[in-house]
Image (cartoon, rainbow, N blue to C red; front, side, top):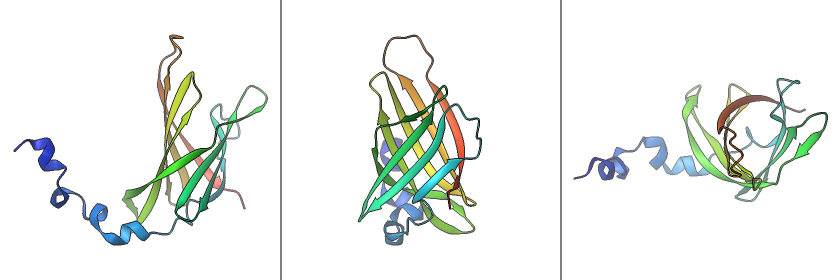
Length: 142
């Protein structure tokens, strides 16, 4: 049998992906308003993660040249965070932001109380700019 198909079979997945308890994890560690740990960031200044029932949205404020830039709000997809913190399963999110000229695939998780985002930015405007990966860190706004 094809190795790709074997890999995708449930018996071969990490138990955290097939455990029903993973589907009911609490998102409290992720929801709320988060500020970048680097006040001089040229990327994302602030993130707000909101929950409405089983739906999650991500709002981002980018850091522009002397001004804030509000990103379009994105629906978040819930993921299992397999990098367990202190032996506990956790949730992570994926959210896509589409600016027309650029798309930003964003992955969000909490590690030791710090919100970590990884953004993969791809340009769609034939400008010649290089696609890039960026990782930033945030603290919860009290």
